Picture 1 (spheres, rainbow, N blue to C red):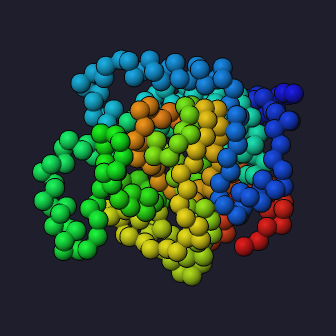
Picture 2 (cartoon, rainbow, N blue to C red; picture 1 turned 45 degrees about the horizontal axis):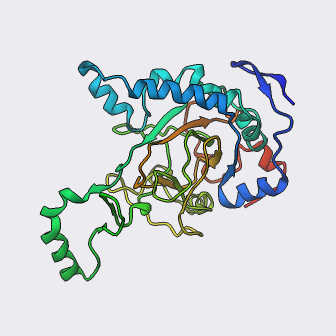
Length: 314
């Protein structure tokens, strides 16, 4: 059953009354900081988006656009112009995905684009054939430091995986070279291809880390320093309550994640491109979709109308 609803600033969008989260699912989201919803986005919407993305992949990149293309492969996603078209945003707005999200958040500001996130075979890996020159260094490392080399060579692929890759977690929102924190409320991921095995470019999360970060901020931690544990930024060691999890799913599945959930992306040892689109939703309890709201980091449910209705306090 589908009916029409008005979303301020986004026109009339379909509503999906049969897309209902149970209280158990909401409480699971509270505890874990994420929720996996299978088979949410219809094939017709995925087919259209994949066709547009693959059309771009099949086109060469003009030399004058190469630097922009390289930038777009980073935090902005591939092809920002395509990401702002209905071909991409319909994955959110014309499927039950938004209906599910608003049961947790309540009303949200209109979302005008989705990050096109592709992970190619060998991404975040090292080609074994190019590691010959590193062998003496890795052997010396094991001899002097007493631990295994920095790469796991055990896969039956042409690639080696850096050891400890999963610990380089981050929280979205820091812009390279800028002091502005681009905070939002929910990360909503749509799988456009199967990611049904580990180490295939999976979204990787630390369950419950949203609470650990909340507690750290409450104890006086600087919110700006919690956004990354990478070497390029200030390292932050936090004790997360659960081991890291590589999220697996099928094309059409949706992942809902709290903004403050520590996460990373897995190396891709698989033979296929991992296709996904990520949307960043902002609760309408925030006056504008832009801007940093530091108090939301020490009260993780401040902007979550559907969660607060359950009486959750932590």
